Image (tube, rainbow, N blue to C red; front, side, top):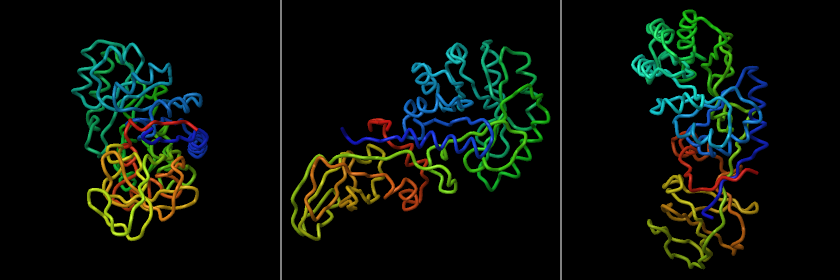
Length: 336
C-alpha cells in the first residue's frame, strides 16, 4: 500500500451534528472535488443516514458515482451539465449559472429540478440581479422545476453587501417552499432569516481554524518501504541534502504525485517520536532521518494532530482547501 488516509466516521458525524445544532438550519453537505480530498463515496456513505438536505458536487460524474452507490439523497450539481437526460432521469438538481444556460435547459424540454444561482458580486457565475424576472419567466414557460435559490459570498468581508443584494432579489421570487441558501463555512453563523439551509464544506471536515466546534477527520499514514543505514555527510534525494550524523533513512511511499507539496519539509510522528524529512520530496516518495533504528512495520503519521492540514497550509502561504483537494485518488481511503 502506498500510504492510506483514515477518515474518522465518529468525528465526521459529530461535526455534522454540531453544525446543525449551532445553525438550526438544514445542511447541504458540499462533497465536491472528492469531498475535498477525503473521499466522495466514503464521506457520502457516512453522512447519508443523517439525512442532510442535499449533497453538493461539481460534476455530473460525481453525481453518477453517488447514484451508482444507491445513495438517494438529493444532489445539487453546482457546475454545468452536459448530460441533461441523466439529470432528469436520476433527479439531479442543476444550477442555473446564466441566462444562456437556462435557455439551453429550457430547450431540452425535460423535467429537471433546478436551483437559481444569483451573482451578488462574486462575478464568477450566476444570473445578475436585474435578470431575476427574466429567469423566472423562462422557467415558468418550461418543464423545469424551481426547487431553490442561492448565492455565493466572496468572503466574510463582502457578506453584508452581498447579503443585502440577495435579500432584495428574494423579494422578487415567490417562495413556494424553496430551499434558500447563501451562507457557507465562513458565514454560516451569520443570521439571515430568509435562508432555510446552509452549504458546508470546509467546516464539515474540520479544516476551518475559526470554527472551533468541528475537528479534522483525516489522518494520512504510511509504512516505510525501505531502511538505509547512512553515514555522516552522505547525501539524500535530488537536492542532495547532507546527513549531519550517522543514522538511518526511511523511505515513505508518498510524494508530490500523491498531492504532497514538493518543497514542504514534513514532520512525521511515530509512537510519539517526531522525525524530520530530509531531502526534497520526490514524485512517489519522501525520506525521513532517524538517529535510531525503527521497526519497518511501524506506522508513520504524516498528517495528524502533530502536523495538521492548516499547519502545512500556513507554512506554505496556501489554504487547506487546496492541500486537501490535491490528495490523490491513488491513496486508499479507510473509514475508521
